[in-house]
Amino acid sequence: TNADLNYADLANAHLQYADLTGANLNYADLTNADLQYADLTNAYLNEANLADAIVIYADLKYSTFYRANLSNAYLYDSDLTNANLYDADLTGAYLEHSDLTNAYLYDANLADAYLDYADLTGADLRYADLTNAKLGYADLTNADLRYADLSDAYLEDADLTNADLEDADLTNANLNYADLTNADFQDADLEDA
Image (cartoon, rainbow, N blue to C red; front, side, top):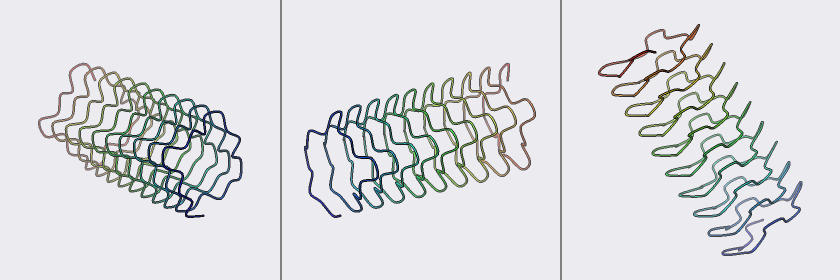
């Protein structure tokens, strides 16, 4: 715990069940690392590379991933409650069933990400790129999606109750059966949605 692993080369490392609580992993290379069930609560992973990493069932509460590369990472059923993912690259990441309650995803790239059944209650997704993201059955209650790009996003059966979608781009988005109760679509682009 509280380990200093700045700039560490942990590519392809086997870190299942590792206790990395509060660890400093800024700029670390965790490409293709196996972090299944790892505890990274309050860890710092700023500008770390976790491309293709396996981070399923991991505890990532309150962790910071500023500008981290999580492209194509497997984060299935992980706990990212209150995580800071500002400007992170989550392109094509697998986040199904993950808990992103109150996560800070401002300006994050979630294009082509898999977020089916994810809990994004209260998440800050302002300016996020969710182009072609899969959000079927996702819970976006009270989420802030102002200026987000949701073009071609799949939101079937998603819960957008009280979500703020002001100025969001929902061009060609699939909103079939989505709960839009009290959602704010002021100045949003809903062309062909």
